Picture (cartoon, rainbow, N blue to C red):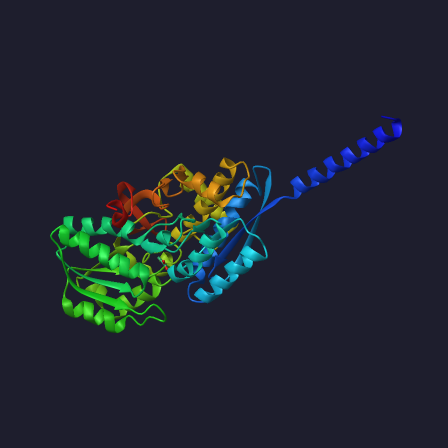
Length: 391
Ligand code: PHB
């Protein structure tokens, strides 16, 4: 080899090395997050987005040597939008993850695309049980309605409540809650005397609350989606149900931390079962709430937000486990069985169902430090979705 050839080889080698290094440094993993940021369910979108950004601010935007880019899109809560946006994110942006999903119909509309593209779809908010069965690429970091309903059914039966009317929003999660409550409460010796379903969009609760009143139950079990609890509570008071002797119980969606403070005294004493309260007493939660409030001074984190925070946490942990590989099958395999301490308490991704196994707490609304909170007073550890346990 003469000097000239040696020189050329060295230059070529150096150049190739430099180009390769630049390509590595530029490699970006994109997360396509689709949320209702406008429309009646915008509070869910705001919570999940704020939490995803908080997680990234706390943990940096690099994982396993890859740069993380979060792309947030608004579907306004309309399933056709969600599906179209997901398609664009997959084809044009080549996202490695789909994430978000503020309502059940939005998650269901997108599930076939995740399967087709073999891309993990992290459902952070929507909570109808069936969602994870619609694609092997779906993992859920929120909760399911049956999972959080059985706790209050048991509590009611043990606390002198014998006759209940259920009142739910008429769509997937409401129907799940209605069924799970009835099965569990009846098995414990209680009686569901009437099942009332209220339209999801623009609900007027007045005629339905009148039916509750007329049935004279010991309690009304309520599921309304996040953001709707304040309207429900207002009409509950206006119809005089707060003074009727009928107790209000439910899943924690109705006493959502995001809007609980605006509800006033009518919410005091309402008992619910749920997986997250901003008042959860742990060091992890206290640090989380404090960081969240610093970043979002006018907001309080709610359960939707925590689903978003842990969803980002799961994505980061999965990428670490695959050493930055974005192969969908490898990422899903890494997510199965993953466990960590969330602001809500310990969580595990069930390797069989890809659902979050988590504590469910019985809570009562109390005023502490001038603010209304869901104060946890009983813990049911490591709860799975009861409709999936027997399968
Ligand atoms: C859902 O659409 O799955 C959903 C929405 C709001 C909730 C719970 C579930 O609070």
